[in-house]
Image (tube, one colour):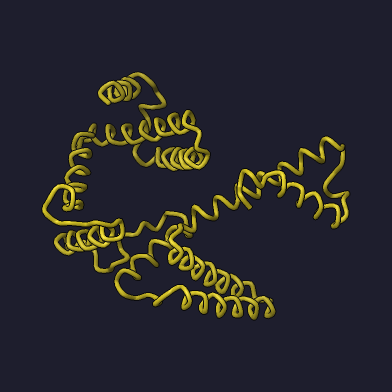
Length: 259
């Protein structure tokens, strides 16, 4: 870590581009690197993960040192703060409390976090701490999870599925109306409810959707490859031929995705 800090300090001192950067200008790079790390983690490629993790770490150190230059705080301050927070929020590890399950750990975490906010007095709503800039699907999950833990929730999955059916019917009605604003709102309501289906099922909607998109992408590229080998264009195929090719893509990639 000391070597990395020295590297960033050298870049800030000697590289015109690095020297002109501010914490605000590097936000886009932090976001890009975080998403590239997400892709690497999804791939399971250790070399790729190691490289992208290093890229994210570089951005973190870069941002911390820019604040240090302003006499705001140091990287050591940030490390000390997160260590103190993790110790405080894990009393079952570093204290006398017990938590035998992951669910109990999450419950304790929420209680401790809420008490911290009460002492700080910086937020007036349970939802104030949820970032507004994160992807909407992930934000929907975070909001649903928070209000659910506060007691505003369905009793079980059956209740959520009833709501899904209700939202589906409302979307169908909106589509029949032809009003885009209405369709958009009802489509969003359906997605939000499906997010809760994922939550009750114990999966994350963002991860699930990413996996499905990857599966579709892989199968479509398979079709492109087969068409290129046959010197054919997708647009020239009949619907029946497209369906057969898609089924072939599904069968030949089934071992990779399992479905």
